[in-house]
Image (cartoon, rainbow over the protein chains, first blue to last red):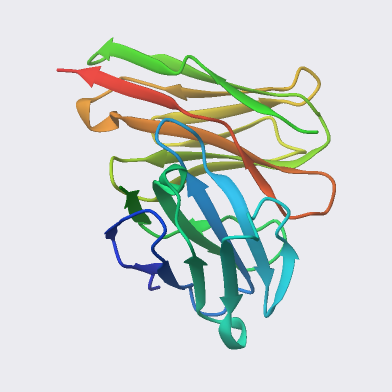
Length: 113
Length: 113
């Protein structure tokens, strides 16, 4: 079984620039999550999709962050404009359904200078 | 609001020692609890999942226990090895049907040869 794929692995941008991350979940997984992990902290949920629809985006800074899940499969997370405090690892995860175990990608490490 | 705490934040032990990592949570209404391992620059790998009706789960040298009434879970690692060095995170699904996995901030483990 192929795992969760994320790209790019690393990204360095200047503040006020924009950036996009891509995630391809495990085939057949209905639920997709984007987490933000700041150094030394646990992952924080940004947005959760169930198929095409958004289940929870209560912690997504909607003035600068946006996300979509295309045809219930791949997903993109965008930041525009970026701030210094957005420097973090952005993790994508997927699960089969409901309370199933989560499978994580390797993440994208974003540095905002 | 459910909160998950992991103490200590960092732990250094000599090779061969048995050790216990702690995870506490504030609301006992949980669906299940997972322990993850995170290597530097990598995503999260699921180690063990305990359903709310279970008391413990074992995999090789790892044993995880769950005591919902006291709001605690422990991860026991027997005969630690340098390859066990990583950050260990616990995460749980609350019983509120949100399918949202809530993470602790992790324990960074170093096993010295």
